Image (cartoon, rainbow, N blue to C red):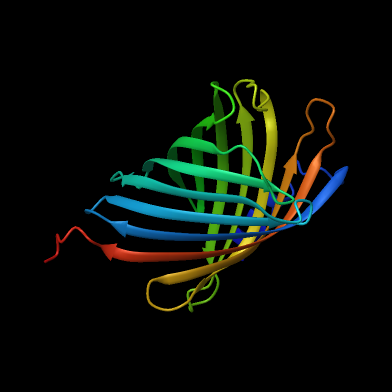
Length: 227
């Protein structure tokens, strides 16, 4: 329980008390993972998000991530995502992302993740560079496989682009939730995520309140190494 109370302040650190405008959202995600060797894993990802301000579907992503785990437990990953956005039924410019990540176990249920992204928008030739550090925490609750998790993540843009990216601290995300075993190799997650976007170019700050639902499925080793 002591670790739980240590982790919960992640959700409060540096979070503004009141945003100038808010939105209520629903985020859905599915992750399917399989191993291709003792230390390699591939994950297929699908994301759909709905928001009141956009009057329905406003965001979708499809991606793949390759991960290699070192003997120390550090994970090195790289991957790709295709991103689509909508606003009140109108299709917005799409985006392609390349990403590289390092995940480091910190002990006592904590981990640190650093994600570096390159963003390609179909309306302008510039590449947007973005860094996303995240601190995470997870701990079991009882003996039935139930787990509590909490994360805090920040977005730092390295450059300006014609399609709208602005240099500097763009946003932060704070999340808390429960991970539940659903049988076999399937787990579900339900949580609350608070996202705060800092206003740029005269725009007001934005706070999003999101209910998050995730399904994680691990199909195991498909390399045939154990045959």
